[in-house]
Length: 174
Image (cartoon, rainbow, N blue to C red):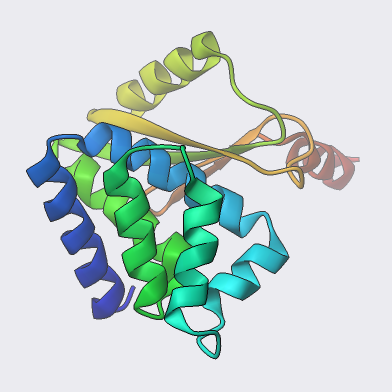
């Protein structure tokens, strides 16, 4: 991860801490990053530095109008206006990791095709806490390419519980 991405993430964390709403900003930034990642046209527009910063800022204003906190809207606008729209996902990921680390937790990213229920999330957190020995914070990402099950990444460890992987293992055994 580049120093610029880490620097932007630290700046976002400083602003969120100063406003006293780190958890809300973290949740909202994660949702914005996921929405941008899932929409090719939006991602291209926000990362196109040939578009004037005011135009890219207007797209952010339209996207986040009446949604989320003022802090989140300002932070996303700042990233995009600074010409870092193409790195929004990486900046947000670094921000989430830094925020969790500051609170003494690890971040586990869970990719699944369908939203996880609260019960599934709490059981997964408990299992990950037991296996890692530290508090874990889930970041759930909807990924239609995951065919059944979920793929969890915590640090450098990937736990692939997807149906596709299970079927591939069975095919290899047969």
